[in-house]
Length: 85
Image (cartoon, rainbow, N blue to C red; front, side, top):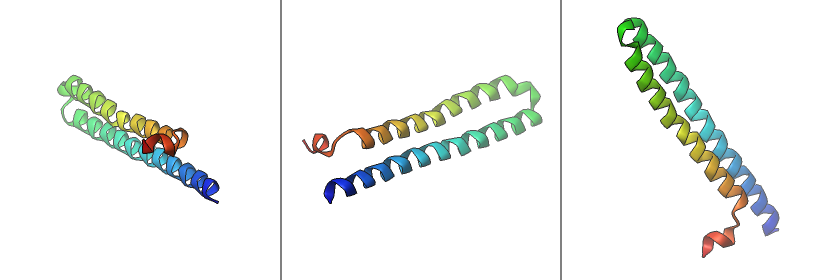
């Protein structure tokens, strides 16, 4: 029974990891884009600086999704015995 339950738990953990790791950065990227457009609407002369900072912040937020993907793949494909040693 252990191998079957282990497989189910790892599948669920990997799915939850990538789901949450993709949803939250997506919401934050949308929020950052919205706030950047509001800021450009208030001060159009600063659009270059605002867009530069927005792109940098979006890159950092997207890195979180990439880290979540790496962790999900590690959960799915790295055996527990390899982690125990």
